[in-house]
Image (tube, rainbow, N blue to C red):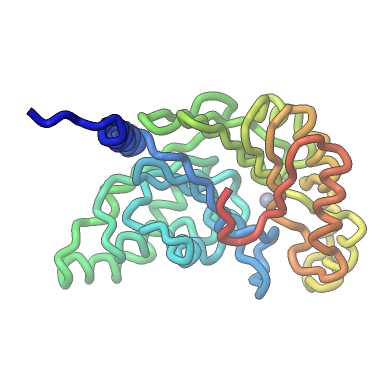
Length: 309
Ligand SMILES: [Zn+2]
């Protein structure tokens, strides 16, 4: 009878453990966060795409906000559009929702044939209905001509109006908090608790206590940021918006305050995103990071399109 050497035994045991580990990874894969668009404001820019993030876990994609170009950003990030399972809108501003309908429509054209739940403030229901109505010609043509399942029954809309639990499934538990974005009401931040990490997306907000509570102890906080000394230059580049400066100052958070909020919430990592202004060469990466880091003892990450955290 052959005897197994100690080295052979160890090799067998180790490869057995590796297989077991792989199996457990398949059951609960690492929860990935990818920034899809990090620029603040709806004006299309060369430097960065409009606001959007995706959390991917166990082959399901949870998209948070749908700024201009979100479908293409997902493709560039290597996330198949057919993986989209849930879409969350933080608030009804065009830099966060311009491609909400387009994302579902184009994902369907790319082969999506499974249920998608969408979550966000009113009038999400009306926006969804009108979007599909507006595009009925193409949708009907593709159903009859290409043999696709109908897209409308795949989409289940849920309007949310208040703080609290939003949804949960085997991958994540999602909680919403009302944030401070006058006059866009309600506006939400979302927290995603997965088996291995917790991720909070602030949406757009002035410094917000409810967001601090939502983010308490989270691993990652993605917070929108502005650089106040540069707002005058930004406003000078945007015609036809006489009250833009007051609006920005009323509903955004400086990078320094984002650091304060991250410190108060006790998060491990603060990710700066939704930069306002997004393309001012006088505000360097170092200036954004230094402003936030001056108030926060944890790790600061400067958000970039397609960066995975
Ligand atoms: Zn906004």
